[in-house]
Length: 176
Image 1 (cartoon, rainbow, N blue to C red):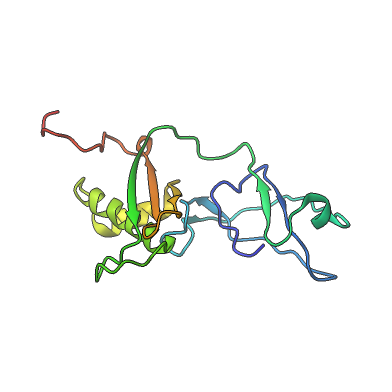
Image 2: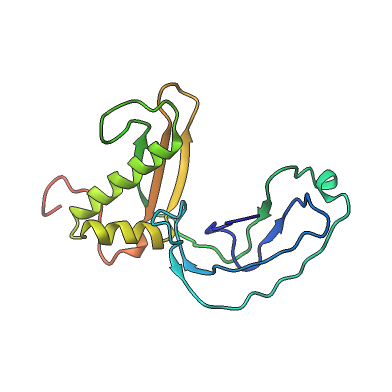
């Protein structure tokens, strides 16, 4: 599967790996206590030691039986981040340095969503570094919102409001 650092791939999940090589091996590691979608800080959130208990079944002709041809598919387990109230930041596929349109580049759009979230969090008392680390370790939800409307790809990053001590929503008036 390689680098399945996915916040919803947790305890109780079931994953289906297509196997292309006779005698293929399986290794597992790189456990995360918490992480957001996209491994924003490149280090996978909050790393942790731990034990993994797993059961492996080799399913002869499983790729044909389950129609999983190239990449893994999984069913999330019951243990997942469970938030319902978010503040969401959008990004589009325009390079933040030179303003050049990158035409449906979801990577640029997601980076811009993250940068927008970081700039906003800085207005709420976080340093840029703290905001960046928060996006990498909190269970943020990244979404490709649109990749069909040329020229802009649109991505969002949703931060659970419940992880903050106080309300972080934008206010019209300081005392609102």
